[in-house]
View 1: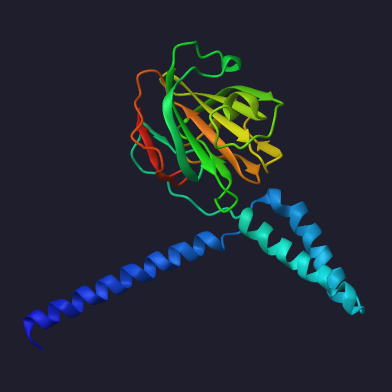
View 2: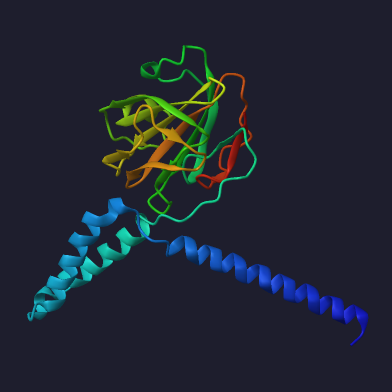
Length: 245
């Protein structure tokens, strides 16, 4: 075989291998095991499916189809794929999957007692198709948690940060600086789940909660830290670097 042809064969093989690995990674993300919060939903939709399938009357068979569709949706929505944070220290990682809808200076939530000086805020909108697990952006200790009841307007709107139901978490870094992560319920989302408690220590990318079904997660960076992401950019929770600390 000529040398040139041999090189082309090697490159083709490498490209094919890269495509296969990428495809496998995408499949693993889609079929990842569900988060434990899915248990009651899976039980309910599974029961409806069984009842519908077991019913002898054809007129009620649609119940089984609805239950099966609901079961498939819950398995997809609550999927909890493994994420590998960068090995490098002093980074602020994306706290959620989704797309960046705004990057702007904003005053941190008053309840978190982080002062009234504006800092950079990166807002990530999660559609029902995104992974909804929230992850800690950096290493630190949770020093404040504040929940606020509110409305359920479209989470992609800026005013959702102040009007919607939300849960605010202050993370204190090892050097004493603070950052805030705010879980915001959306138009469809009606339930915020947060496992972070004051005094709990977290590692970068570690799970701390989720929001059910379509939502937004805001990250307030420490004073003087500038974000490296842009509006429209796709975020991968626990992996995408938002800023250097």
